[in-house]
Image 1 (tube, rainbow, N blue to C red):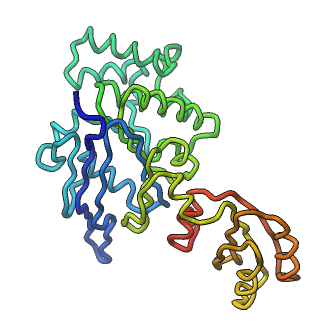
Image 2: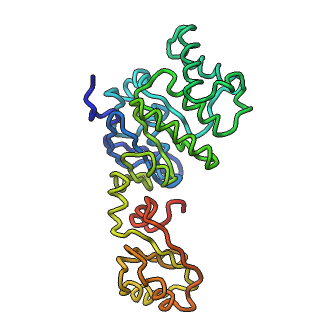
Length: 316
């Protein structure tokens, strides 16, 4: 029995450069560890380096430098052995469209060495686990996005891996399908499977992950629990001011209002970080005057953390 805090993913000095007329460094000297049984998230905008990192971890891409070990196995020198320990759900649907749902699960098990009888039994278990029994004879092209994603996850864990990599698992799903997917992920976590997921949905990382690494331009900016990351902002609420123009003196005036922790400018106006709103909104409206076009208030989120670290929205 392995210790509960044993590292199952170890990334050291990971760098990936793509050659070309304009060379791109997609991943820059990343160090990360994930412990066994942990739900871990890579949070960042599109193009931040999340998928490249996952591709290297899952042996689909070779690193320029650095090392990645999965369950103690180097993914470059022993890729076949490392793959036995992992399941992978890529960003795009890779199910065999010429096969039924049951056949997708069955042939995956056969690929990993199951006998015909054992593969059939495992496929039936997975259909029941993911509430897919009624769709066992359906072809992939007949499935909704949410159902297809559940089949992909079922297939990824068919050979009973220790760790599951999910690359943008809820991208393109409607809210109901996303919630159903989250329930499936929680079920896997309760079975002791380690989950590593990439996402640009802050609520997904906040809801599912024990720890989150925020990545941007190929670099890890910070790594901690969602609670600690949000508390590092030093404020409970964010007031977003959409202003008609830019006035540096106005930001200085806003910073002097009682209860304002800090503020920063953006392309639309000013963000103000506060602990509470007691009497503050009327003062802000008074100070901004005709320059104020719109005002909104949000709770501190992981996107707030990203904004504080980079000065821009997560989806920009």
